[in-house]
Image 1 (cartoon, rainbow, N blue to C red):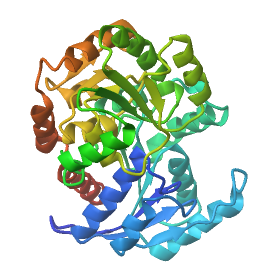
Image 2: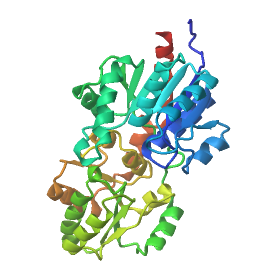
Image 3: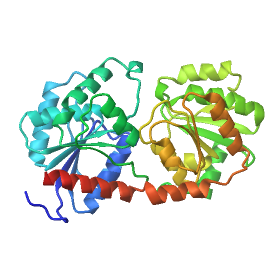
Image 4: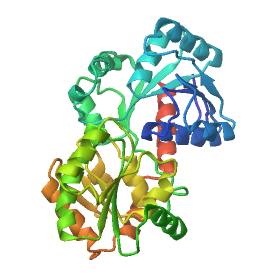
Length: 377
């Protein structure tokens, strides 16, 4: 196949669902960006659900429902995927996350010819904290990785971790996530409305975490740091925005730390732009990250960030925020106190850093460049 620089191709993006997760959001942005560049784009989903579905449909990007009936719907589901890909005749199948990666690899073994691209989006994650299927599927990814035409990690830390665990280093490239800076931007009206909804005054300092309530996100460290901040600064409020299996444990921890009257567990949000604009400080207390979308989105809204030194978080923040060691609540508290006292004005610089380095355009262009290079091989 001889390709010109302006060659456009057909691509089939594969993902479990279109729920409002970081990987799913990136897939939607990529699908839209590639279509705008002339690519023929289809998206295959195990389960046709999630709030991001409407965004694809509004852009006339076909979404193929692969009709998975549950965890143990395996062989029949695999053949449905195989037939869907064969009907679409894509030059490239690009799958997002472990389950989709394995399904795409298995589908190619059944016959359709296409270039296979995987996305991996984790870094230094402790698989022991998850159910037994997760380590098995991760090991299968490692074993099959040498047969994949291209693997895209969304962080340099993720690439290093994957190689250390047995992923093939051949054709393993990094494309940082793209932040939609048109959507995520400072908005004083949204800020005022959101803070009124939360019952916050202008003098209150809202410190928030926007993440699922999962062990890897380090909410326990955040709450432990919050207890110390609360002693120093009585006008601080702490907001945990998200849902997950850790909720009851974290609520009990807030009670034990005697800060339950200063902490709100707000559940998931369908409007992250308003939520982030309502904050004064964004905190990422994670024990593991690849590329943190929420950190980039907060920065795009000119919200100063305090983050743990995991994944590519330090690279994203640069000198526009504070980076502290992982699992160190004392260091986290010190940084939050410094920013909460409003002695530094770093919000504008944070947004500029995202605009210059981590926009959606950069992500789409770099991905397109790698896809064309893969076709040339």
